[in-house]
Image: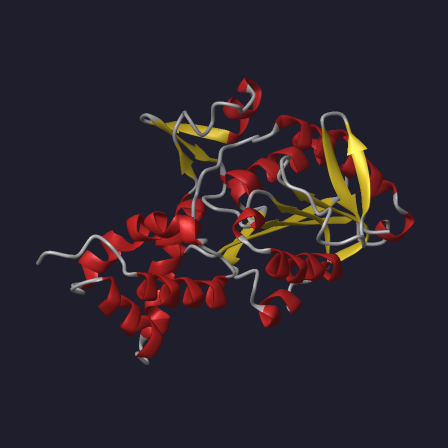
Length: 281
């Protein structure tokens, strides 16, 4: 069955608006080709004749919800690696974690809670787990670490739970950590259970108000290179939820090229060597 490779403008706008409503991800007019490319294979798999038929199914079928997870898998970008942006990780290890464990109100339960929002295939939350474990083992004996990690893509989450990675995505991992926390399996590496047990993965839609309100309080939130796909209105909503989720004294870390300048003034900007973070005071 041949499939028309181009969407007409009406179909594009219908699909774009539907995706925006369900996920907050926005495809501008000049990204029409990108949306076409991302969902073409899915249309072939389902046997739809063209983009218009697929759009009609999503907009009017009662069974569209099951299709959403495949659509989200197709449109989300999972470009990530371990220890991505080293200065941010150094800021966590050398400044943020020591500050958090010194706060008087954290002394009762001695538990550090982190969220990796938009965790993709797991490289970021597992990196956070390694850093936190090293910190606790050497400088904060008796403390526990609990990390939650959420993503829109079920396929990415399945890979994250599996915890198997190639050498390319591990290229920035210090050799001592690679030997200590990974097991070689052929050409790949599997993360060890002691790190895997520190992270709980689940489906997370950052634009779902009810779901975001159910997230328990956190000390640190990492949400890097996720909000670049949102417009300002969605960014403000998501960042507002992050503010509510964070404990007093907690930190929000976003992508090093991102900014909250026109989004919120609720946070204090804290500068670290080569990095910055947003603190809730």
